[in-house]
Length: 634
Image (tube, rainbow, N blue to C red; front, side, top):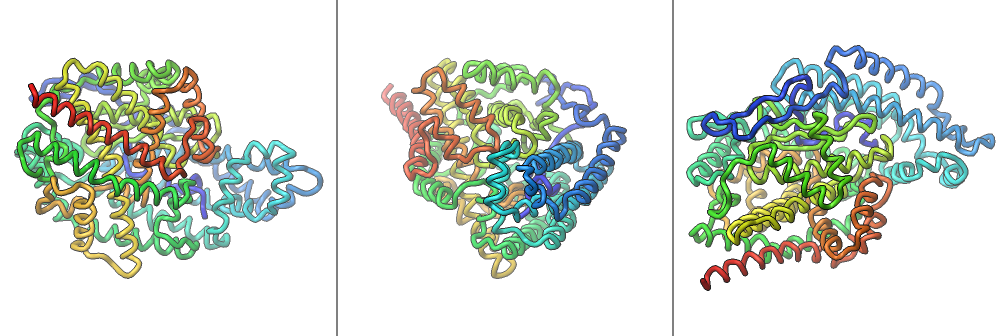
């Protein structure tokens, strides 16, 4: 099975998107009535990667990559076993791995630049062409390196172990041991090359079609034609008429395009089934579990615990919220409606930055210093723009550079939490860069730990500062909703994917059937207090993770529950907790989750682990009920 770092179609852009041209200057963004309430929103500077698409350095790196790949193929293909012979003790093989690692850093830089530039404006034909051309070139170059991990996995276990124990090859032990977990699912070299080269015209092409289609869609609401991100943002508006209008606009456009999204979904599910069948994966999500380096039993325990908690968490909370809003049930467009207590002011970019960095600094000055670099050095792209991909992400790029963060910042409290989330990723990625290109990447389950922990730090800081019980209630409710969206919703998404991929093995699914499955899992997870109105059956269409990274979604629930348990330890811990936490992040992909959590006395394979994390959410809902009861007595 091919490592991700060799496959441009699986580069960690995932589904989110990337933003603006690196040479653009910051600009004032007006919000509501033309007033510039957000302040100056930053746009990133991609010149740290390359000065432009015609950069001499970019051209030179492409040429260097091709020459180096040719050289490695000539010198090492079919010869790796011999590098362990003749008393060399692994030193020669270690040198070969170092060459492979350095070449991956160069190619990763090139793909990162093209990906970021493209996601900044997926509607720009020049960027589309540049992105497509780079994908093809890097795929062609990396296909020459396919032999390297495949041949490493054919080395004798005992000889490799001896070489690692007696030479600098031991430095790469975590990567080599990780690589060998792929061995049972590895095909012969020619088949691997075919799968690799066809990725550009197979999964990669369908991913790109989804991105460009979704970016081009416009939703007419309140007399305005909006792109996806601002339309989704209307679902948070205090005015119910605007929320309903946005929901109906989404449903109308999704329905008009549902045939295309159905075709994309069916095609990619079949593509995955073919790959799984050839490689020998039995379960529809088994390949994701392997990529995440997490046992199926651990994920199954997480899913079972969350589904068991639906009535105690989401069902109970939404019943409370319906009462707060004076309704028996909430239509789906009111699910994330702000409470009357929630402050409606627009939060400026400067205030958002100050809030998050202060929360980080109270936990660890070093963590705040690292996060501060993203603001000071132009590593964030924040404005909403035409053509810009929706959502948010932190793209790690490569260890020789630095991460970039994309946001669509609109001044909502949730946008501040999103900033805290993505900065958590960014800090994690910078700390892990010390492990180098092969060992810095972290499994998705653990990658979400730092981001959710960053959110939790920010939330707890805001909660301490709440000036009144009303504002405390609003903050608690917002946090509970975020946790439901991160845990309950993502497990529902995971169950949706499982049902879709399982049924797809018996034939194509119609748009109607996809809608039925969507409504089934949503009703189960959200409970009777949420009314799923006509049109909602199409809302599966816009979830990008279903397209770009099948079964990615459970990583969010994994990370949230893990952080809840981790934060509980932090509140009772001694002064060394922050150092242990940063050391865990700096480990990158060199340790299994069991080893990483051991210093905190936590074990994700313990059946009670997930219940402990879920009880934190239940505790916040208990506090909301207590506030209600106290106010009712007055």
